[in-house]
Length: 221
Ligand code: DC
Image (cartoon, rainbow, N blue to C red; front, top):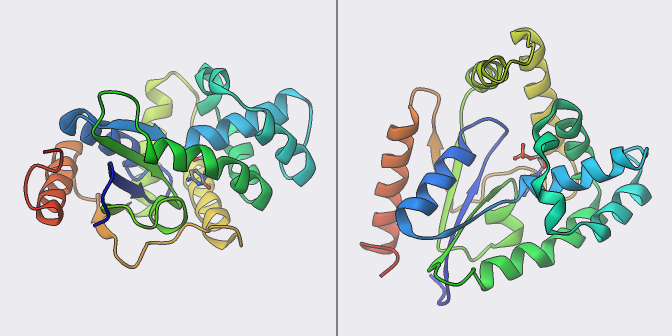
């Protein structure tokens, strides 16, 4: 493991439980948390707001150059149209390059009081922080992930059809995995955490056991 702040990289496909796990790990271990998907969502939202096409590399690149902290705080960042736009702008290499520096400086210099960071995304362990002390690849079957997403949408009062959510999950997996720029891919040295049959507490316990094994005890001491 390299010296410097502890970096826990959590990658995996959509709706595998990365966000919940990462937030809880950060809480438990006194680490800062960065949801890197929000950066791509903010870029996608900015393109849509300007009336542009998220697949248009020039529009997406201009939006990536313009985003600031305020862009990360919009309630509609999780809406379906923004989700779809995020996946499109994320395939543009110039967008990824623009967001890389921000992510790396967050990892290198966590906010005051935090002993390190938990970052979740698709390419944290492979591209953003290849030297991360801990790498976890969180996954689950597409059907289970679609079921969770479907329930979450219904819980928020949004109309949802399971078959459509499943088709969206599969399409997004494909786009995230097949793009040329930093595709979704497990780092060779990542611990695979399959949450298909685990609840959030069981996933947290499994991740903590792994972190303890890698760091040899309390990772923040
Ligand atoms: O994790 P999420 O669903 O909020 O991510 C939104 C989109 O951004 C998703 O299509 C994948 C992309 N993304 C990425 O390419 N790299 C990251 N580090 C994080 C997200």
